[in-house]
Image 1 (cartoon, helix red, strand yellow):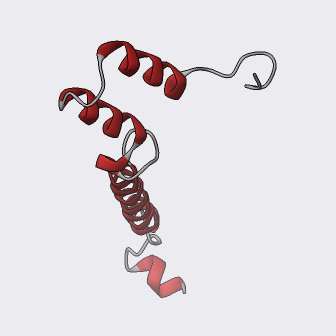
Image 2 (cartoon, helix red, strand yellow):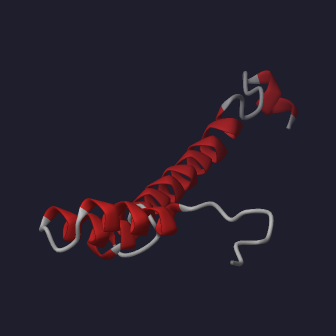
Length: 89
């Protein structure tokens, strides 16, 4: 041990931190990519992308299956916030 110190070896230096930080960065990137891919797959409303309720409603309105009044009414139901009564009517 004394000869190692005399030869100029002063411990592991900054490399002790580099490898754990590298693997931490890899794990964070993998988690971020998986979360983003999952978010894209579920779509805006947690549905299945083009099958999400708002997407279906928008498509029906665009194709003329429903009129503006019905579109606004149904969109309001889908996007309404739950009131103080817990969302019960």
